[in-house]
Amino acid sequence: MDRNCICENCEFRNIVFALLDEKDVQSLCDNKEELLFRKGEVIHHEGDKITYFKYLKSGLVKLYRKTTSGEEQVVTITKPFEFVSNISIFSEEKYGYSVAAVEDSVVCAIKLDFIKKIALENGAFAMGLLSKVSKVNEKIITQTLDIRQKNLVGRVAYILLYFSNEIYSTRIFDLPVSRKEIADFIGMSTANVIRTLSDFKKEGIIRIYGKTIEIVDVSRLEIMSRKG
Amino acid sequence: MDRNCICENCEFRNIVFALLDEKDVQSLCDNKEELLFRKGEVIHHEGDKITYFKYLKSGLVKLYRKTTSGEEQVVTITKPFEFVSNISIFSEEKYGYSVAAVEDSVVCAIKLDFIKKIALENGAFAMGLLSKVSKVNEKIITQTLDIRQKNLVGRVAYILLYFSNEIYSTRIFDLPVSRKEIADFIGMSTANVIRTLSDFKKEGIIRIYGKTIEIVDVSRLEIMSRKG
DNA sequence: CGCGGCTTTGATGTTCATCAAGTAAAGTGG
DNA sequence: CCACTTTACTTGATGAACATCAAAGCCGCG
Image (cartoon, rainbow over all chains, first blue to last red; front, side, top):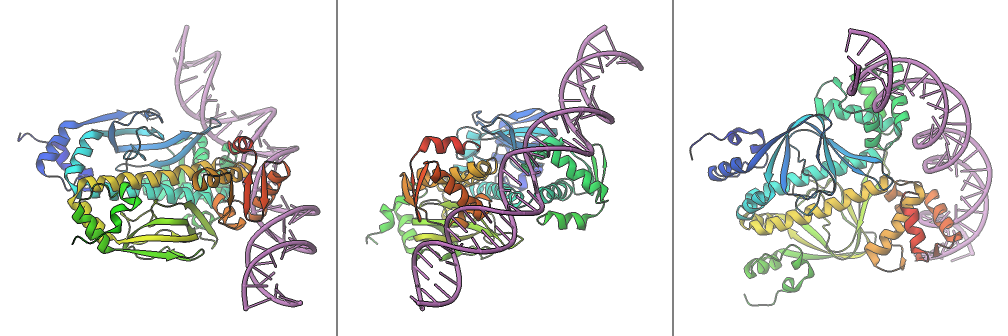
């Protein structure tokens, strides 16, 4: 029982597992699996039964769903230590959204029953979960509403700033998704996303080398993001 | 201590307060306030400090926020027993959204600290909250994504079906909001919302008597809602 | 009964999707 | 490693969808 548990030092512990005692962290460790997904691989499909509490340890994933007309609608793209087994994990039987890796990703999966059992016994832990779930959902809602209020130019600018500020924290980065995926994310046509990126390039706001984007003029991009 | 507590029979008890014992329900009763808001009155503004756990007992409310360009963006319109002190109540200090009554409404308000205290001691109760919060958030996300994927005609059809099916459960009802508010909800211009309603009327899909709407041909409306 | 806000309709212009055709890039199999 | 195939990207031209503007009708309220 005194063997080492790597969960003890997991960064995620401070986010929702801070309030577990040693015994619980130990059995957490026994109940978890770490899974590697390569770029492009699907972590789960919408409609799959929810049996695991999953979160992203490293990499990058996209949440998406199929629309009635068969196209793909990207809900959000999210980085480590946000839930992956979004959104409905504590309210539904089945996933409402698919999740796929857009970069090589490591997912930590814990049996949902186990999480629920601990939460029932430990109100503080349950409240930690509640707070985290709220935060994640709130982010998605805010982002979706933010995007909705903008026009084409504003949306493309927003996405570039999102990757730069929220995901990579750097002015130069590799786009982890295709132009089409960006289009599915912001609800515009692929051709117009590309056109807008070209326009930004012509105006000297960004530089493009294939998948690599460099933001040259952050403040102008911010202005464009604030509506159009 | 054996005086009657009306909370005991409140319909909301079965939704999240089912797992409280008598003592807790009693002190819940002592800690709550019921507030009446007239149509048009604001229940709280975005940016206000969150101190109460609030839910709608009767009536109808809209969640909304101001966009950067100063317009109003309606997040959702929600009926009794959904949270009003949405969305960030367990994760933020301040409201991210305003809430206003669109019909005369009764709101039950309980000190948030009190709710948190109970949740910390009672994991089952906390899990009930978690489940309910997830469900409410999920609904908002799904609705926002559903609206986003539709065109003008589809959005107007969707809203009519939403009021008819989700809110009023009847084919003939009084619109609780102005045309402009519908426009702010579905992200289209007021003029085009009106035009589309007129078109539906001309085609015999609905009948309009001022604020009163009668849905004549549900199935055609459903077809229009499924994309355009 | 007159004023202001909500509603309606038409005309005009902008924004954006779609289509098409071509180029670059990235797999695939020999 | 090269030829081949496929998939992603790019750009222009066209038309559809939608916003905006303006003018008029309606309705409630003081």
